Amino acid sequence: MWKYILKRIGLAVVTAFIILSLTFIFMKMLKPERFVGTYSQRMAFYTSQEHSGYLVSTKTPREGETYVEKLTSKAGEETYYYSVPVMEQYVHWLGNILHWDWGVSKTIEPNVKATVIIGERLVTSMKINIISVLISVPAGIALGIWAALKKNTMTDHVISTMVMIFISVPSFVLITFLMLLLCYQNAVLPTQWPNPTDPTSQKVLGYILPVFCLSFGSICGYCRFTRAELCEVMESDYLLLARAKGLTRNQSITRHALRNAMVPIFPSILAEFIGIMGGSMVLEGLYGIPGIGGLFVNALNAKDYNVLFVDMAIFTSVSLLAGVFLDISYSIIDPRIRMGAK
Image (cartoon, rainbow, N blue to C red; front, side, top):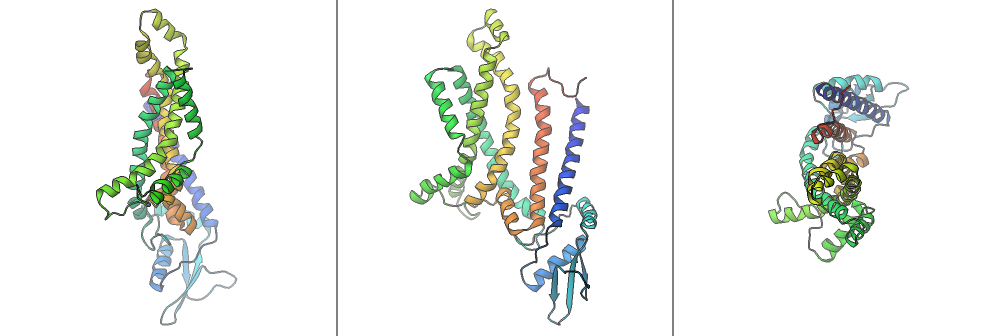
């Protein structure tokens, strides 16, 4: 088992390296955007890019080449900055990553390290997503169990119908409707994410809308998946044998059906967590949440590639680590499953 875990971690690291390498190369193949700001800000940015090995400066223009930027000092001295070949930039990037240098922001927060910007926003996104998972998992599984135990009854039909309707509503559509209803028309909840200086009560109210919208679709998904798995397990032969040996219906469901149904359900929680993080990109932008999801969209629109690259590295790493934990969780739930066994 340990050999399999180490192998999966190694494959995840290699996969992340390939994804990030291709992302960096493709980004650098795009036409570089000029920095907009004061002379000192522009000089600081291009100096950092030159120090990272992505640009080279000359005092005279190169014949036949297009410069990225030309800076003219107050004394009239001109400095021309040219892009380094992409593969040469890639070699410099590998060295910078080993020293944990991911570059600085160009537009979001000029000349601030991209890792600092991500670090400030990562906590907010993780709080919202973790709270959403903690709410959606027990609520969705409980509804699924209830529907399975009441199979083919009115309760089951109502739950299944509502799930099919609401699972089709995207989170950004739901939050748009709720913002119109609860924020602008009735002023029950804040219209935007509260500021750090707002009172605690206002901050708590700010969590309600995004957490509910992220949890809504997940609850429906867990409910449908749990009902399907539990109904299948309850019709199996070994559960009939347990009833024949004298176990009551509740005992057979609690001791055997639920545990076996959880084998495919529990690992889906990790996959759902990744799905929630992806869905929070648009939601954070709509509600003004200072998280990495909204930051990804803003950095993409502003063509702030250093911030965008670090943000994408976070999502890639979380997705791959979730895949590793997903495989390991099977053996934790059911000891009969041993990954990597011959």
